[in-house]
Length: 227
Ligand SMILES: Nc1ncnc2c1ncn2[C@@H]1O[C@H](COP(=O)(O)OP(=O)(O)OP(=O)(O)O)[C@@H](O)[C@H]1O
Image (tube, protein in one colour):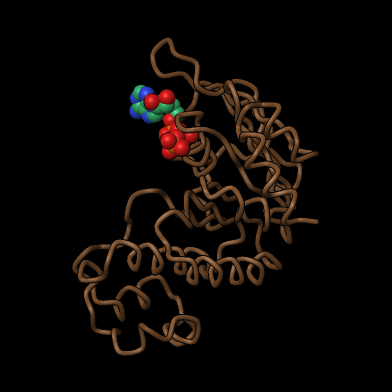
């Protein structure tokens, strides 16, 4: 499956936020979106999901335009920045509700083994995020949108989530954005940078410095790690 987002024009009052976007996601590939604070990454995710209506947008799946909001189809699962799981639900109820296998979860995250009856709001902020990321990634939807999955997770959880993403991508098109750029760069087949309302395909990591997203030393550290 290919998902293409094209020609987005988003304004808030007179202020232009997005204007000239092309993003392509594909089954089997991870598409990373990078960009500075306030450049429009979350708005773009909401537009793709269909919960934010811009002045103009084109969404195509397998080359066919889709007019219906994607959230009204059974194609997409979205991790927004805010919590979406009902706070007082027990984890057992949450996994049943979203039809995700609890035993699959504790196979990856053994610390949760005895916490099936814990209420969601009794988990720490990072643990709540972990559960939500897992639920979204393991849903049976073919398009996965992840807005800042890594930012609140401790390093070992980040590594495990990256491994799960690599498994899930074989059946899904995954679009992901996060300020932890090293992780995005490490897992993404294609990276787009949002800058001044436009998307730019990052064909060479040096462009991240050219477009003033990364400093020279941050870029050098990534390049050193890659060698
Ligand atoms: N409801 C709104 N009304 C007015 N302006 C908004 C609204 N939502 C977002 N904006 C503006 O749109 C721009 C893009 O916001 P968005 O949240 O998409 O940025 P972002 O790239 O996700 O930022 P961050 O990395 O800081 O989370 C910002 O300038 C923000 O102030």
